View 1 (cartoon, protein in one colour):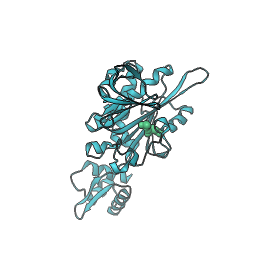
View 2 (tube, rainbow, N blue to C red):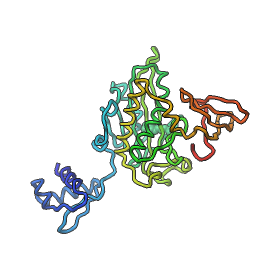
View 3 (tube, rainbow, N blue to C red):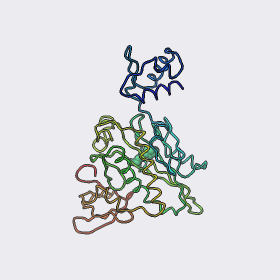
View 4 (cartoon, rainbow, N blue to C red):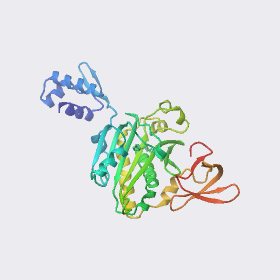
Length: 329
Ligand code: BTN
């Protein structure tokens, strides 16, 4: 309790030193107790400077993802009403799939500081080291036919552009279909999974997982992805506040989900953010590669490409991959 009160006194006075005597008076404890509490806060990672005859000043807070820190920036809505924050977990997607079977409600959000078995698309693993990323998943239980849910990943990519723009002031771009880029480097990946009842074909639940590289330096990424991976901090040159970003993601997802449920989500929003449009690309299949120009995104988020011989094709994610010729776009 006294640690929390000391913290709030120091936070309220960022510019000046607060004397031990002043703090002990407010708390009604001895100066020795104040000094002990400050030592405890330092052990928790708070950087508190002390100057003889002047007192204490808070220089930096530990970069920790906490429920309190996230809630401080939340604006409310269905998503995040039930917010579950973990230090370490296998995978927030796996956690919510388990929670869904136990009856967790629509809008449950799971956030982790670290994942030990983070998963990416196409069965790949997703590196999720502690302290430098944001890993979170949303459990949705809309009353819809499963086929209506297929565009949710693309809508989530736009919500991520909104969230990042609010948190850092730079609007990212989307590499078709759903990689979120800053400075042509992938900073965020999205993995959507759903469960459909075999007998009836009814949708049971959807889990949307989002992983953001926040404070990695280039050398923190494994060599095989160093030419395409990036972090928010690499793009801005400043440390990314992970709690604030997490809250902005939940805020943006709330808005997206509400519009999407009302059938009001406009695919033009995706087109405006899609960096692949208008570019020369390589369309890559197991059978080979072809050069093309990415001409349009249709209403189902298919990419319309024109090949060198003038023929056109609409391609869907999963069946092919598309690489830009100028960097990862
Ligand atoms: C991709 O780009 O391949 C998608 C990566 C998705 C990673 C996120 S991190 C939170 C959630 N939990 C997981 O195990 N995966 C997703």
